[in-house]
Length: 461
Image 1 (cartoon, one colour):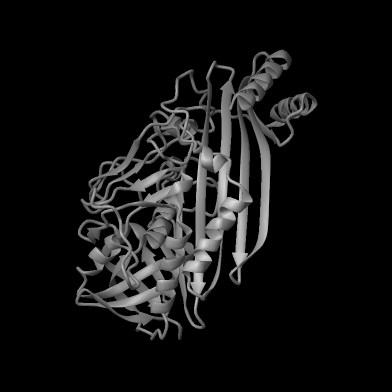
Image 2 (tube, rainbow, N blue to C red):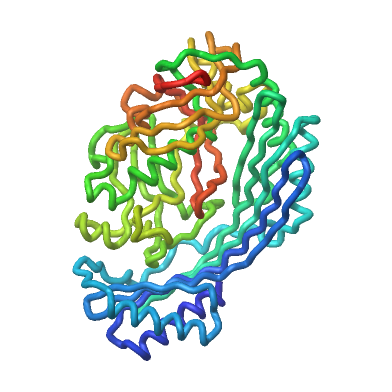
């Protein structure tokens, strides 16, 4: 962290020397990522990289420009400053520049597990071995990864903060001749990931999905496992909770309205113990626990400094590395609150692989258990109608019992409508953190029992 803060401070000094009137902000990160992949029940790839990344943004003479580099030598930093100043002077006027984040402390320096930071290829291979062995001869594939990110921010207004975070993740499938089962989990702590538990879960689901039949398309009551709920929440985050989308009337979000079932509470939390993430955003604004939906009532979107200024409010600390693109403010540590603090989650036999899911299944008269979503895409951003496929296990539920594996469906469903008042029949008692494939986003979700889900096609079309 100290090295990254030194780099950020050096760049600020270089800007001051060359363009004293410029407002400047710097985010410097060192991302150390290691990945062990396996297929056909054998490790076939082990890669690791440690990559610095430095981003500089300037506002000078009413214009804003940005530059970045993965080189951190004195010459490279000087070159970054030179070309960013030149680019800024050629940029169009920026009348909505919101100014720099003022100096303010962060609530935490982040969660760092030394075991993750020091993890070796042998540590990841041990997770893979446990997964493969627990699958009991089924063909397996997937990955385990470890990550340490150290970051720092500095600007010419005096803000200077730093932090670090770790993540361990595993994602794997077990496969029969005609079916797949999946298990995935992420955490800040190495001790939380048990390859044997995940391998047994994937294999149990794969075997239970053998002999699937096709159910006609239609609207069915559903239990979505956390692996499917994670997709729902990620789409809400990317297309609904962004302050830019709300400002531009592209989001369904309506602050102050009861848009969700009273059982739904969604927060963004990057500051509690055990969270994978930084306690400040890419503009240097400190983060706090931020309510988005409270007992069904929408509190509002998350904001960076620009979207907040346009909305007449203050930044919630959610500028991201992807900001100033198609999405600005990202709730990168979003959580759907579980129903309550129940007993520790336990494994159960059958497709409902844990006790929290099994409890929701027991409350269904006739419906569908969905393990996972795949290839979801937006059809209507304003109402957040999504289309996608089920994957890795679907089952018919009758009178609280799982009775028959089903072939995969295509669905076309408004995600907000699926969580609307009266539409949520139950929430799992536990939330889990799941790996996110794109960028450093960490989502924590429980299982959900929903009154209706619109399946629009089956395996026959």
